[in-house]
Length: 90
Image: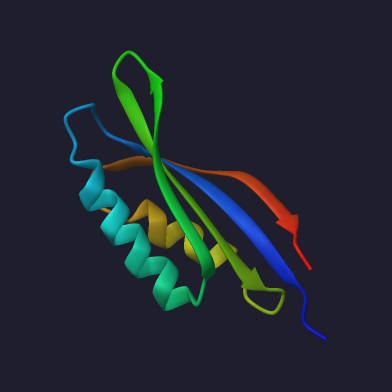
């Protein structure tokens, strides 16, 4: 039986002037292609006017989560990608 995991990523933009909705839309396409389920996207303030896109999704155990890191990193205007939470859901 395949279990379900959850992953939460923080996508930091290169500057406060970046359109975060564009980053969010690109992240949605990546998660959809990866096969993520129960997706949640939010924009959270970090400091000094800078905000980050937070991406949460669940995925089956048999998927390689590391492949998604480089895809998130390749989004235009993303300075850094950080896996901030990962856990077994079921």
